[in-house]
Length: 334
Image 1 (tube, one colour):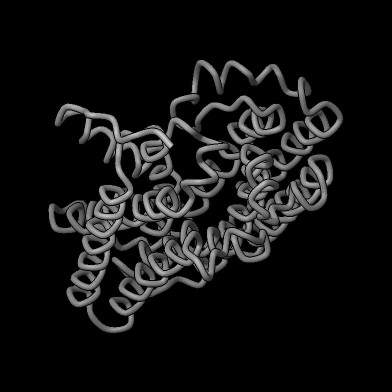
Image 2 (cartoon, rainbow, N blue to C red):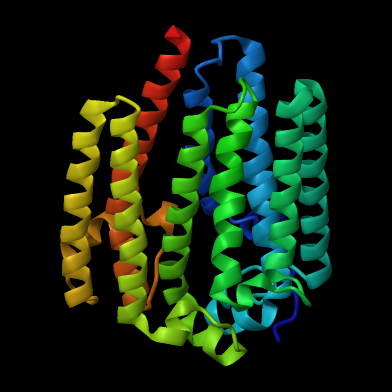
C-alpha cells in the first residue's frame, strides 16, 4: 500500500476534486435540463436561474460527487486492481481525508435539498427533499457494507438508475411546476437507459469484480451475452419512447426516434459481431473528441462500449431534449 504522497496545497485540492470525479457530474445534467424544460414554467429571471443552478449543484458536484468519493473510500482494495491511479490507492489522499471529503459534500447536498424543499414548499418541495435524500442513501448503500448494493447487478443497476436518472427528472420538474405525467414516463425511460449503460460500463472492472466476488452481469454471463441484454433494454426504450411520442401527438419526433433506433441497431450489430473493431470508425470520437468527458479504457470490451456510448447517448439525448421542449411548449400554451 503506497504511503500518502506529500503534495502542495494546490495538488491536494486537485486530489479532493478528483475523488469527486467531475466527469460523472455530467450524467445527471441532461435529466435535470429535461425536467426543467418539460415543466414549461421556468421564467428567464435571476430567481429562476438561481433555482436552476441550485438543483444542478445539488445533484451534480455534491450528490454525484458524494457517490464517487464514498465509493472510492469503500472500494480501496478493488481500486488497487482496477484503478490504481485514483486518489486513495495512489497516495494522493489518505483514507481519513477521503472520508472527510465524503462527509462534507454529503452535508452540503442534504442541506441544500432541505433548503430547496422548504423554499418551494408543499408536495413539490417534499419531492425535491426526498429525492436528494434517497439519492444520498443509495449512494452510501451502493458501496458501504453490509449493504454493498454494487455486489450484485440486480441491486446495483436499479440503484444507479434511480439516483442518476429517475429522481433527477422529477426534482427538476418539481422545482418549477407540478409533476407532469409525461415527465414520469421520461423519468422511467431514463431509469432503464441508465440500467442498460451501467451493465456495459462494468466491462472496465470485470477482472477486479471477479476477484472481489462482485456479481456484475459480465462476470455472471460473459461479455457477448451482456451486450445482448443491454442492447435489448436500449432498443425497447427507443420503441416505447416512439410510441409515447405518438400518443402525445409529437408526430415529427416519432420519425427522429425511429431513425435513432435503426441507427442504434446498426451500431449494436457491428459491435456484437466484432467487439474489438466493429465500430472502430467511432474510435476518434472517444480518443480525440469526448475522451475527457467519458473516460478512456484499456479493456477491449469497455473501449468498444465507450465508442457505442457516444453514438447512443447523443441519439437518446437529442430525442430527450426535443421531447422535453415540446412537452414544455404544450404546457406553456395550455
